[in-house]
Image (cartoon, rainbow, N blue to C red; front, side):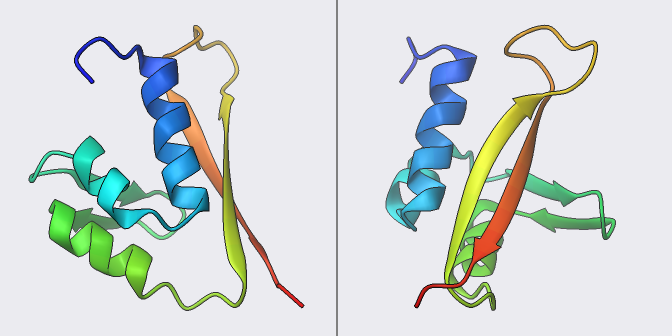
Length: 89
């Protein structure tokens, strides 16, 4: 993974998140990873707690993640993750 560029890393993370591949997500995060949720102001500190959040996420159906580059940001810098919950039938 040392040779993976930032965009490749983000793509691998989103692919793992979209398939609830928590083992791959664990490989991508350091033990002291912090997930910041700006909409609620929450900060989840530590890879184990972030995994617990994902495993126990209460949404019905699949959660699909996508990324976009924010206004005025260079490619590969300052990506914003957006999650959409889709109910499965």
